[in-house]
Amino acid sequence: MSITKEVKASDATAQKMFSKGTLVEVSSDDDGFEGAWFAATIVKAVGKDKFLVQYQSLRTDDDSGFLREEFDTLHIRPCPPETLVVDHFSLFEEVDALYNDGWDTDEEIEFKHSDLRPHQDWIDGKWIMASQALMKLLYL
Image (cartoon, rainbow, N blue to C red; front, top):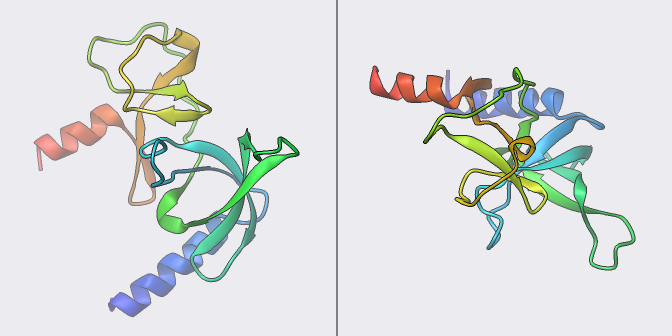
């Protein structure tokens, strides 16, 4: 398949996956936000590979409503699937921590158990548990 066809196919997939009202997570490259994923809702498509989203927890500067921002498809992913409730995590197990209204893996501070979730990666259109992703890297 040519690069052009692959790009068109991925644009079409994004348009289907990220339709108006879809709950997603978005990530920003802005200072202080790198690596964190924030819950948002798709408001509308803006061009071929961009979407306007409304955050579910981040508010505008004047606190009049929830913040809206445009993101390209590289910074949008579906919400990860629910996982079984974990009663404890192992030492050095990769987790996401709810920190400053976003899910982050980069902070190494003490968190309440209720603010942690097993880390999952969005790879090639599928959710992969962090432990499975590591196994793939080690045994490829």
